[in-house]
Length: 197
Image (cartoon, rainbow, N blue to C red; front, top):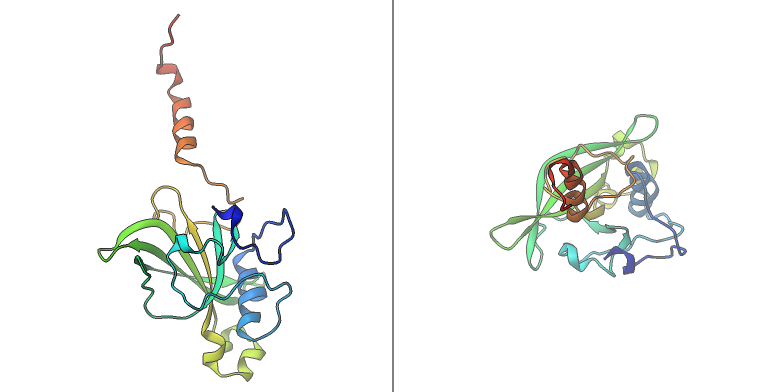
């Protein structure tokens, strides 16, 4: 699904795999500060929120993840459901250990009754100008700098809420499919299987 979507100005074979720090400092901060971003690869989807399956061809896709800029909205109601906050917030730290942003987690719920799906979203926010020390934000109105967010949407395998907030950006992004997990679990049971002779 992610192989045929919007790829911005990326050259063939390029994989967009930024860390949280890079998303906040190199993309979100530049967007909020009205600074040019070269190349400009993450699109604005100000009609946010979208159902996750509608992002194909609209958001920057890389593997099974979609990236886009949006503006902060209180209610995240879509055409077919809503994004429910998980009340998990994590700081985004730079290499020097300084807090540069905030990451919030959401799960997509289908229908008015709110059936949770495996679709997840991480919203990246800038810190206040006092804590992040961004001089360009101090020159502008506070609301100008903090109205932009960067969203990373992805579909998790298995239970969508277990392990949220416990993941690291050190993995290679490879997830096992249900069939892979089934075949791997069968490998453990080969001793119990009797084959015809």
